[in-house]
Structures are given as structure tokens and as C-alpha cells.
Length: 194
Ligand code: ITT
Ligand code: NA
Image 1 (cartoon, rainbow, N blue to C red):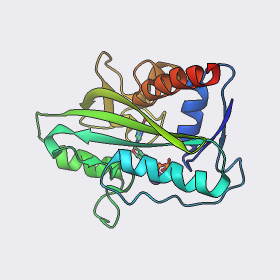
Image 2 (image 1 turned 90 degrees about the vertical axis):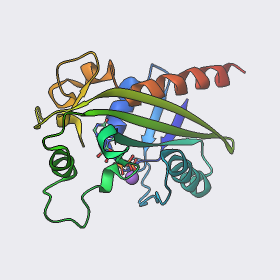
Image 3 (image 1 turned 135 degrees about the vertical axis):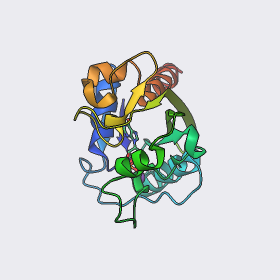
């Protein structure tokens, strides 16, 4: 089965490709030759995931999926959440989203956080969503250079390394994205059999 993956994030493509079993292939927007800045105007990951998949389904008429992800930090009442990719936009006092996060948490004891991924799948015009969550905590400084986004400052529960210090295979043992992909695969397997 081949699906278009409605994303412009190459790291997501790499992670999901690695997480999929044999028999499932994905084509990113770049690989499909689709140049499209996909909108994410909504207040929830669920709505943005729907929006991204719908835009590409309407454009191509092909079965596709998207995913919207975010980092929810307890001491920040769930921020950056749905704004994770744009957290420090328009704030030049911060060198990056990660820098802003560390500044806001400076001196705080409460460092609990979780990553969440919502996948939106559209097959034959019908939508299904799948969710994955990874609980953990935010470090006081970045460690490691693997992965992307907030990986160098996030330690998943059950590990003492940041995602930034893990290989892709190690990250998959904990990953929010992998958990959502597993549910997607269960659904697609049943779908293909029916
Ligand atoms: P799309 O084209 O798929 O929208 P994007 O990078 O804009 O790609 P999102 O809108 O879902 O993706 O933004 C999620 C942001 O959350 C992402 O840019 C990272 O900063 C962060 N993020 C998501 N998953 C992550 C992960 O596994 N590790 C570290 N940071 C992550
Ligand atoms: Na995005």
C-alpha cells in the first residue's frame, strides 16, 4: 500500500518510513513534486491534522495522511502544544524554540512534559485519526544532536538520555510518533483485508 504523506518535514518522513513494516510505502510532498505550504490555523493538533490531510486529498484525490505534533509542558499549562513549530516566532530575544522553552522553565522544579502526535488518514474520502503520546521531562540544557525540534531537551520516561542523544532506533522505542504509526498500521492492515 502506498500513501502520500502530507508533510514538509523531512525528519517526520524519515521516522515514519523507518517505523512502517514491509508492504507500506509513503511518498512525501517533496517526492510527489507537490510544493504546498500546508495551513495549520486551528487551536488543536486534531483540527490541524485534519486540515493538512484534507488539503492534500482535495488537491490529489489520492489516499493520504498527515500528522500534527506538539510538546505539552505541564508548568506552561500545555504550551507550546499546537504552536510547537512557531513558539519563538517574532521574538528575537530567543535564539530558537528550544531556547525559549529553557528560558521559561529556568529555575523551575516542575519539568514534566509530553509529546503528542495526531495522525489524520484519509482513505476514499473517509477520515480516521490515530494518537500517540510520550511522557517525559525537559532537561535544563540541550544534550545530543540527533533528531529535530525539541529532541535535545526531552528525556522520555524510562530513559536517562534525551531524544537528541538517541539513535533513531532508540527513539522509536519511546516515540509518540511511532505509537501513532502502530495504530495506523493496525487499521490499514484490517482495511486491506476487508
Ligand atoms: P508539517 O509539514 O508536517 O506540518 P512541521 O515541522 O510544521 O511539519 P508540526 O506543525 O507538527 O510540524 O510542528 C510540530 C513541531 O513540534 C516540530 O516542528 C518540532 O519543533 C516539534 N516536534 C514534533 N515532533 C517532535 C519530535 O519527535 N521531536 C522533537 N520535536 C518535535
Ligand atoms: Na507545520
